[in-house]
View 1 (tube, rainbow, N blue to C red):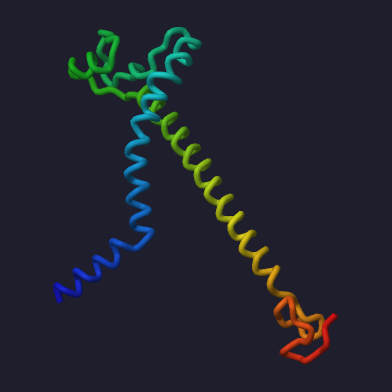
View 2: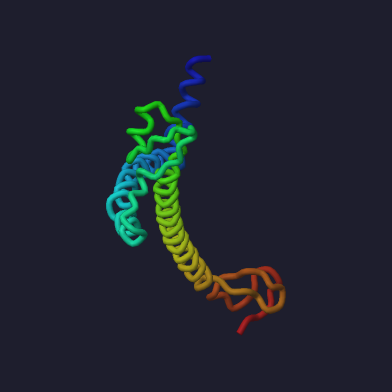
Amino acid sequence: MLKNFISEFKEFAVRGNVIDMAVGIIIGGAFSPIVNSLVKDIIMPPIGFILGNVDFSNLYLPLSLSAQKYSTIKEAQDAGLVTINYGLFFNTLISFIIVSFSVFILIKAINKLKNTNKKEACAQEAATTKECPYCFSTINIKATRCPHCTSELH
């Protein structure tokens, strides 16, 4: 029973799409810090500058009625305030949009390659066969007589 379980697991683990998924997860894990840095260090500073020197990573809404204001989320949380960190959410949302767009472009390119390969395969297949004009069977392009209906072909 254990031997069957292990052999089934091996079959599952070495299946092509499982390995592809694992590679995708690893690449996605490596890609995520790059996108996060792009958003945090490249995209958001100019947007913050345009909007009047706003640091999105420190935009928050305190959920208490404390009169004291804190300049960073960390200071507010260290003082015991509960906060809604909408600036961090905004950064994460932009990261998500960039990752989603990147995946969309990647999938689009892969699908284009697949369609090109299918068209080439169809073109090669079409070049070796033709359709009988009498019985509409697929026959070899070099045939002079249809093997299905025995009609003479031109």
